[in-house]
Amino acid sequence: MKNNRLLFIYDYFYPAYKAGGPIQSLVNATALLSDDYDIFIYTSCYDLNSNTPLKGLLTDQWVEVILPNSNKAIMVWYNQTKGYSKAIKKRKFSCIYLNGIFTFNYVVKPLLYSTKKIDTKLIIAPRGMLQEGALASKPLKKKTYLTGLKLSSLLRKVTWHATDQVEAQDIRKQFGYNASIQVVPNIPKKPLQSIGQVNKAKGTLRLAYISLIAAKKNLYDAIKAVQSSAEHITLDIYGPIKDQDYWAECEKLLASTHTNNQITYKGDVLPANVQSTFASYDAGIFLTKGENFGHALYECLSVGRPIITSHFTPWNNLEHQFAGWNVDINAKQNIVALLDTIAMMDTNSFEQYCNGAHQLASNHYQQLNARENYKSLFSF
Image (cartoon, rainbow, N blue to C red; front, side, top):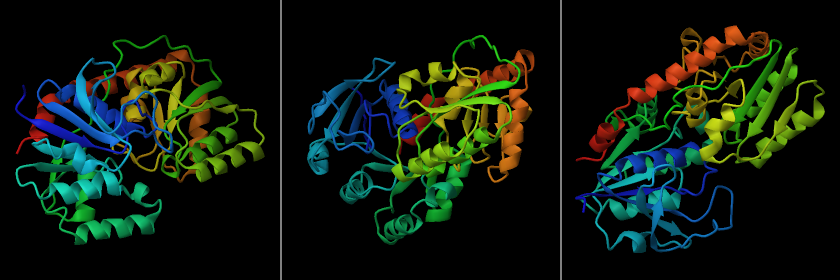
């Protein structure tokens, strides 16, 4: 029996997947740590934007769950009621880890209960929710919520988990420069050992968007740029619709603009299929307003496909590394011109970017030292 128990708390967990990167981060982290700790997850029995429980789950009790792609076993409480204290009061945890920040049942309520435990380390991982682009959505509601947290005593013993120095700065901006912060990178999937054959026709470009559909992800501008291109570009869109009003704007744009370039919404793609899906395209496009890591961007790179993205992610200086292109999302015509330029590349010139993309992802994965970094995060 291992000496330490870790409790991870988040609104959604496997087999849920529609909340995107935060679920993948938890799955990867808990699989990595399960050899050293007893892992427990407290979550809901729902997926994002669903009022129907996920099929086949035993709810409101601890159940053993085998994680995908690792065969590692952890304990999960799929909550259908509001039984937070019931779930944990008979167990002692050395650390409680809160994934995300803007939720009462899975952040505030655990903080109210856990701040009384002097021998339990409390960690909050904002998961990019404190970025300027993220806070721009529903700003008054979020500002009020954060002000309430700061005025309370709930954060007095919290350690913040930032996945890079930029997120650490976002935390300090909101909670002060005396905030206790540990910087530990996200744990992504392994890159493919080798990339598939590159076969790009000159004058064409096959793009994939795989991400949540919400204003922060800026899909609207990606659609507009593809529609405006003079070359033959296709864009396939995958991902759960998080913001129905925003998707309605995208659909209106698709219906009102006549273009020879084909743009298709193809629904969800399961996390296990993301890499193979990217591998069937030329490149990924993500004109996002902010990512603290960007699992989709990394997974596109990891199969040897370059990315077209903003400067608001950790994946910068892409063109210098022949791994993709960073764009100013406010310079609309420049984005269109870039798409035209990429479309005109032939296989030989484009293959250099595919190799560079795979190399960037491989270098990132090899330098992580993830296990020791996460063990340091969870120690006192």
